[in-house]
Length: 238
Image 1 (cartoon, one colour):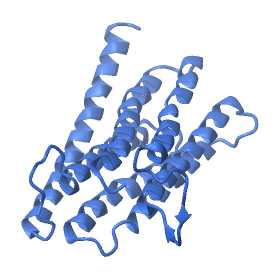
Image 2: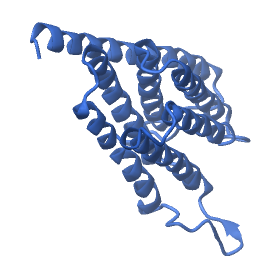
Image 3: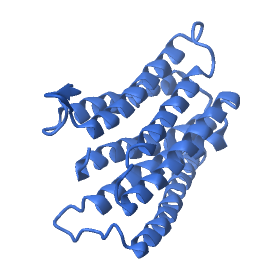
Image 4: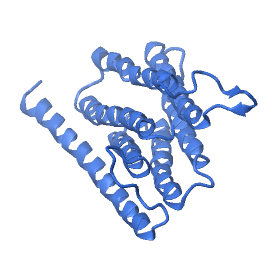
């Protein structure tokens, strides 16, 4: 969606999931898997379904119309909705994996999630063709976290429950979320702030540096949550 809230919505989605993973994975690491942890898997997918419906039903959304009056209807909205749809399918597979362990092959949940993140990167790769230079550059940086996340999750298929890969997944997810918000602030400045010059090379240099800051911030969030969980589990004895 070509406006600020269209980037804030997926940004919030990825931030919530990423922060949740940064807490859940250390808890799972410090505790043996139990029923409580398995039930929490279902709760994390509610955001995916809400995200897909919200993208369709916002005031300027496509309202489930793809082609009307001899032209395509808001394809950018549909690209975002397609992204949510893939994550929704991943959520269903994830729940089936935990509810039907005797039917679903081990690792298929990670594989489908990896494909969902790969699909996100694929969609956004063709999202900004023939757009201003800063627009293309800032979205290309998003692809780094998307494709990196897809590779990381695929490695979890081969090395399931590896805490390092799981924390990397959480970090890249938080990075995607914060970067979606950054894209919204740069391309569609809210609150009447001055618009960015999308042809200024200095802006491109700053955005590249800013992406590195977002990477550091994501790693710090994961590290802090890891230490808080460690303190909670071992120091409090719970």
